[in-house]
Length: 173
Image (cartoon, helix red, strand yellow):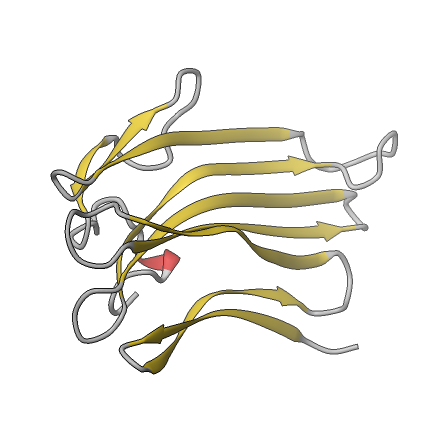
């Protein structure tokens, strides 16, 4: 058994040359009850900015879990992320990303067995709408949930307020 990290890339044929862009990774060490899953839910070309080439809108999910049989406990979280890749200019570039759903939970690994943790679950959500006329994305709260990002309107290409650095979809992120 050994450490296994799986990387997912997007290859873009751009101006007669290929660009390889890392979308994410998943860590699965092959030991115990620990690991990650990373998957692409959708990739679509959409005009989310007026003029130029269509943008690539990618929806992806990431799940992490870690368990401990000695305390009969497990912790997990999952996120759904929307990322926008621009295809105008010298090379493809991230215009921003935002988390639309985030779940964190703690629970017993084995039901009906003693555990050292109290079950907890929190779920956060936002919804979004692209406005091609202004080049903005609007993030708005979903009734009954705390938002994953601050609601508001953000200019694509200037989205750091809605895109946390750990998502890795901004220069230097």
